[in-house]
Image 1 (cartoon, rainbow, N blue to C red):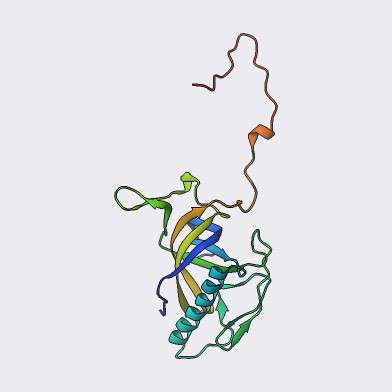
Image 2: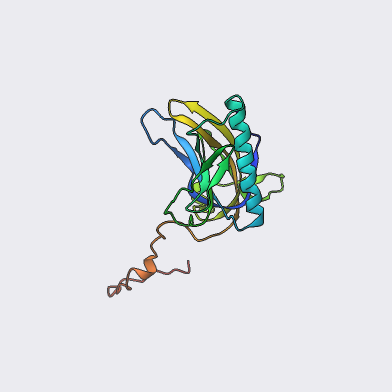
Length: 205
């Protein structure tokens, strides 16, 4: 398998985060951890990352296919309803995606059957980053993260494609969560009258 070296994505927005519990989408498929990352083409740093992704993709494709770029090659990245993208001699139209946060963005999807490391921003006294879990509620679709991935070229019964292996994710800062916001029970109900003789809850305990 032709695989790139580690690629580092900085301050990108996390989407479709499935980092803690893997899922299989078709019969016979191994359950995978997955996520997509959104890059802003108007951001100078992100524009450099986008160019790097295209360059590394071309390298792994040429290594896989003996210096050639096959027609019909599919990509795990592209612009969401924006500019076309070029990999070698192939020019790809943007891929309209009507998802939260995708408008005008560049996206790259990634997956792995191995659970990725998901960590916080700072190191502990032992010099290691704190490992985050789903119940911490810190990493979610819509927040901003740093991430590491590796590109690889696929050639099998499912087609010729450039994929991205998901390696690790680091929380950077909060962002507006994608999808349906959680229900706030404070807005859902009125207070309930306490029956005579029954004490009200003491929330100061």
